[in-house]
Amino acid sequence: MIFQASVLDFETTPNQDRLPPFNNFEPSDSSIFNPGIYRECKNRNLFEMKNFIEKPVTLFLVLVMPLVVLYFTIRTGLHKDEVKPLEYATRATIPAKVDHAQFAILQQEFVNPRDVTAACLSCHNQRDDELMVSSHWTWEREADIPGRGKVTIGKKNLHNNFCTAAEGNNGSCMRCHIGYGWADKSFDFNDPNNIDCLVCHDKTDTYKKIKGGAGWPATAENATKEFPVPDYNFVAQNVGFPDRDNCGVCHFYGGGGNNVKHGDLEEALFSTTRNIDVHMGTDGPNMACVDCHKTERHNIKGRAYSVSSENTNRVSCENCHGDAPHNDIVLDRHNHKLACQTCHIPVYAKVNGTVMYWDWSKAGRRDDNGNPITEYDADHNYSYLSIKGKFVYDNMVKPDYKWFNGTADHFLNEDTISSEPVQINTLFGSYSDPDAKIWPVKIHRGKQPYDPVLKHLLSVKLYAKGKGEDAFWEDLDWDSAIRAGMEYNEREWSGEYDFISTEVYWPLNHMVSPKEETLTCTDCHTRSEKGRLASLRDFYLPGRDYARAADYSGIGIILLSLVGIIGHAAMRIIAFIRNK
Image 1: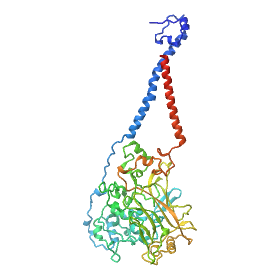
Image 2: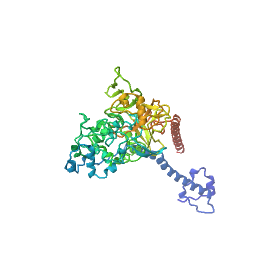
Image 3: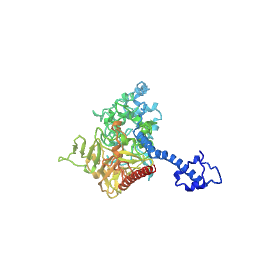
Image 4: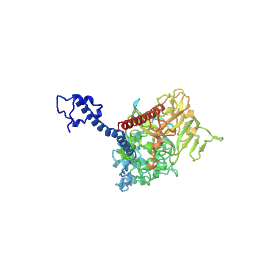
């Protein structure tokens, strides 16, 4: 039907609802066509089309879209793909390719271990050149320390708050050097026959360096039941890749006893289970140290930040596991700011205790008869030794946590004490540092001698073979021991001494727990003061941090939004009913 409009029709139309649909409107006489009513009809049709489009769009944005977002958020959070198993071959599974017992040069009767080294190098030529530039040989390296520049540092010249320092206590500390006879400054680092090949490559578990021998094995003159003279032929004919027995004999006993230093390296790891360490467990992969600390030309990967400073030559979990090991989007995103160890090493010192505090100021006591004193705690760890002072051990320890970017500073001989406790080492890193991650650490605290006049940490002579040589462990005399230690290290001393609190940080890497025992979300994302990351306050942590004003403002905005939505819906319903 064609509707014909006139001026009269337009003028007498009481309201817009009586207008015909625009798609049926066609003027029949241009002389009586009213442009106003034409536009009105057209606008109304466009209005209806707009409403027709707006309603589903509004429905999609208000209802469907939030549900879609909510669905994918929940799905992402709950979805966990299976972790892909690793395929690897450990050193222990690689069969020996050479039977050293067949070599004629190893059939000779060895009396001196230096002769064994010469025999080794006759075939393994130039291996001595590789080894003699390694930090296991030099006990020092050049490092670029932030704020200092190039500095030569290492176990050879750095302080610690265990036995204070290695240099000057050579007879004892250098037992763990991979050489023979570093008893004093006359040791020749350029003589390849001073290299001890057997300490790292012995597979008989019979080769030992004697205590107090500066790296020498026992001889016929000083052999004991605990330290017999090695059968050099037997050992030399049974060598291979280093295993935990080779590495652990030094690294498990550093600081003068089992698990004294690291907290996550101790004799229990010689033969252990997955519950103690998932990598080294004999009921698991049974990995050797060199499976992670891979070695190329005698350069062993890995850093101990008690003596290292640079973010180089490090071992990382990602070397094997990649940067998305969980196959879980939410968990894998944590890798950006969390070291794997943070969640996977919830406790350390799982079997035997580790020293948490060492107070040298208490050393020197004698009993009523003038003899040194030895006391034990409930777990039969030393709690007091006259020659070393007071100890506090602990086991199943929860780590402390620090931002760490792989670089560190150290308190050097020439440094002046400006605050207490003295930081023996400082781990660099912060939330704003793109290379830093939260890392679990053992903090070892102690008290050790310092010069209250010159404000330096003091070098102390601890070891000698007998009394009367100014060694504290023999004479229990601080004055003479400090004087001898400072003179050996060619350092200035005011003649005064006191004791000052110190701290050293040990990043944790071992005693990795099974996945069932790792930290859960609420161990960190909690407002409890016992939360694992409660001490790190330089960043916002969901579930822990909040601002009351921001919280109340957010709640208010949500409530006002709900009121607005309900009010708007009510008005639309009322308008719809009235128009109907």
